[in-house]
Length: 153
Ligand SMILES: [Zn+2]
Image (cartoon, rainbow, N blue to C red; front, side, top):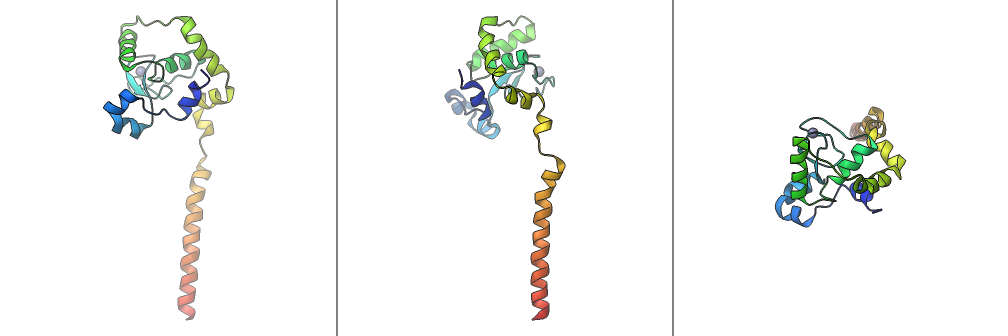
């Protein structure tokens, strides 16, 4: 049970049935197949925004259901069945089944914060540009150094 979030952090190794069917796609995505808890469409990664309806789970309850509806915890045909039920509006999960997922999520508030506010944890513009500036600076330095050598030859 303690493995759940850890598994997701590693962005989901493909399971065997996925390997056979979707190896290319799965490896490219490094994500788990999941079902959107709002519209029932398939998506990649339980916590990723849904491409069909744009919903991204942020509340503990939503995250718990999203976690439950991934190939980490359900077979693919079960997920598709759940998706159909969500579309029909008849999908329910026993609270007892969801409870351990909720407990697991609440056990790690730092992780929850990260999932809720990914933008806060993304490196800022400065940190993204700085390596480039340093790179360009070094190249300029090298070029000017070589130039001086050639000139003074
Ligand atoms: Zn959706």
